[in-house]
Length: 197
Image (cartoon, rainbow, N blue to C red):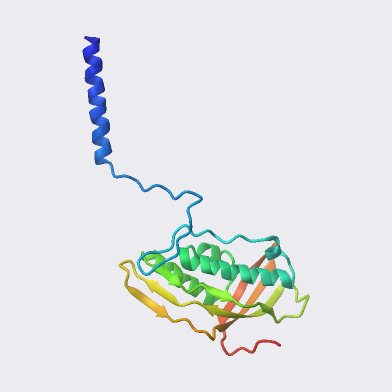
């Protein structure tokens, strides 16, 4: 009798396992930590993009620290354009209304299910325009070459397209140092600005 009962229970358990396996939707496996980055295309967003790492110079209260911070901020901008992770940019803003608005537009594209192809800025240089010892506040000019930019909607439709401009543009930035870190207080495109010699 116990042999029969064991056989029935085993059969019932096997049937239950098979039925639950067939009826349960499979969950996508998480990408392994070593998964290779895949850039965005016109049919799919980027994946497995790693956040750029910082270094000690980025938090140094000096002109070199301000330069390193601004280079790093633009690296984070490239990351946000590829991933939609705009929190990393917002964490470095203190005011900077025009930049906050631009960051909000990136978040909106991804929040609506879309993605961005290209547009990653290539900073040629960070030219500090403030005198040394300006009390933790620094201004700079940044010649930048933004790449070709296309924002796609959730269905793959083109929402916005900007072609590559070989002439690039110039950004004017202001940053301030407080509590052991730099914050961006202003960042605006100023294509007519004259670069120092």
